[in-house]
Length: 422
Image (cartoon, rainbow, N blue to C red; front, side, top):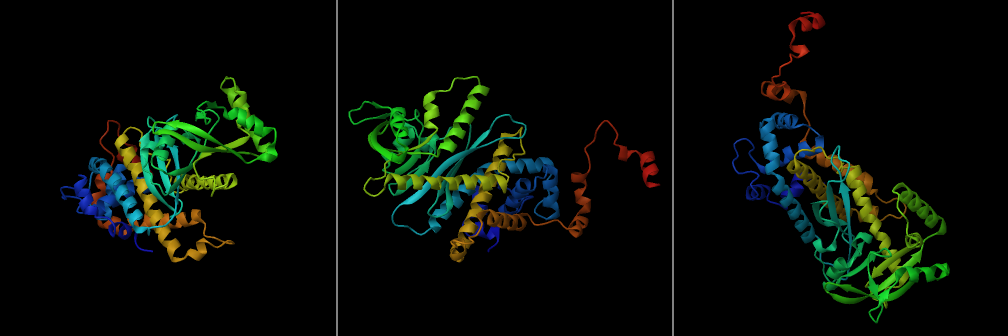
């Protein structure tokens, strides 16, 4: 496996992109974009303070910066890191050979919170190409920008899978207007649908008929949806979930409603016993059961979020007072995730049999952990006592406390003489 920096530099002009984004204009201290990226990685991947990042750069001879100098360089790197993400995504798309037929895209978002915050602060939107096994688009927004398919571009050869937050007329209109196909879960009230004559179609009444004969599941019917792009026919597909799971879900809903002191709609309790999907896949080639089975692949993007948070600690933000540094932190973690995905994709091409082994396939969790540790060591290196001693005179400004009114106990000569005997 090639070095992590080589994986980036063979596809991206680091110096040119850093100069274009204003991250590295005058090279008086930091001589190259490679060293600047290493400093950013030290800040993000080690949890070090700004002073310790400056110490690290001095010992590794990347550039000797003060605490304020490190902060300034990190803030200037925000646009550059975002551009690197775009360039890595474009390079990934170009490296995938053109495929015939459809590609399956999984779309979802996850919330991220800053330390000490009682609510979420950021929302990470991902688009995952299941056919290629890699992230193909990413966006980082505040909570003011909700989950919507209007932020993505679609093509006619795509099948998009998404959860119920995307099952609204505005999002479906983007897909239908682009002639893309989709399978999206919906609730009983978030997507108004019509019958052939244009009259409102009641999804709860339809589910009530299905609940009288659970053996008829899965069931489907044709409805029409009114979007900003026009009125389109779609398929409504439903399957009853096991009775014990439905009762457990209803019990949780009643407990939540009691805790929030609100009245629970009986239609919500009935809908808790069904999985309801809306799709425009052709009836001639896709049965209701196949559509339901296809929707189960959406779980793969949940596993991606789990690996990002569990291994890359994406949700463990360090910055609370500086939104710019918070975005640098998050964007760099996303960049790392994309590079790891590129390396994993190459490994899968080299040894596809191990990944497809039905008995003992490669664990993506363990592989991500291995690749991440290798990436981290190749990017930031490791400090040695010899290098620390070599640069010891230059490290005083990072290790010494700033002046303060109250005298430190270690600066008290009598105290030191009593403890150390001099």
